[in-house]
Image (tube, rainbow, N blue to C red; front, top):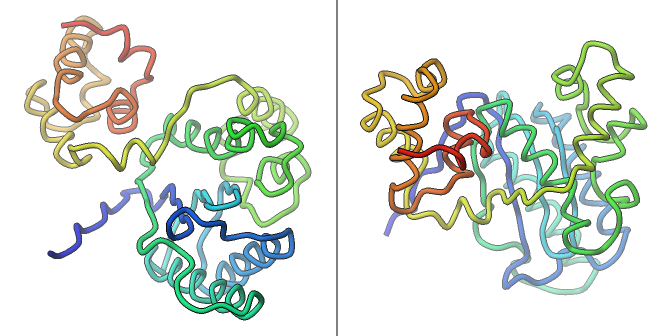
Amino acid sequence: MPREAREKSKTGIYHVMVRGINQQDIFEDDDDRQRYLETITRYKNELDFEVYAYCLMNNHVHLLIQEKEAELSKIFKKIGTSYVHYFNWKYERNGHLFQDRYKSEVVETDSYLHTVIRYIHQNPVKAKISGINEYKWSSYNDYIEGHGISDVEFYLEMLGKEKDMATRRYIHYMNELSDDQCLEIVNTLRISDEKARERIKEIGNLKNISDLQKLEKDMRNKILGKTKEIEGISILQISRITGITRQVIKKSQQ
């Protein structure tokens, strides 16, 4: 049976998760983690892509990247092949290390970009490993210290034109308690983003999804209320597709 084609991001930005086969650890020590970051840097230079956030956990990695010339599949094939070669050589093993396919989701709105970056940085907190600012193997401190593998200017400029103010806003938002859930839940949905978009447009008689935000409040909320009844859809998915906050969607009724 052929694999389902991955959804193409209109912005070129994707949230990607790679994990160990059978959930096994892919990092045994800090040298392994450093090697993985060096591998990303190497292929950033070769394939020209941006990294906006990352977090290395014991058995999986989260990345927020923007592809340019090279497609996502090529980027992660290169990174994966190089790292597996190193890992197998170091630990005198053979065979696969990563689960067959990486998981990915498109990031096409500013609101979902905010959500994904915070979700990635809060992984160690939710896993009860360390505080967000204490974890060495995420991009959280790249934004504060101004160095690392992350391309921080893109997101900081979204938070403010003045760097100090943008950094303060970043710290405040990243440290807010949240129940953000990204990618894992989205990938278990029974309805794809494309089908969800079509259903929402049908419900609201909309030409474009973006038209939903332009409607009067009562009409918008009526459409959102009906949208929540679509089988297999979640509030997170609706928010990501429409750009409307989860709080507004939760309160909406038919």
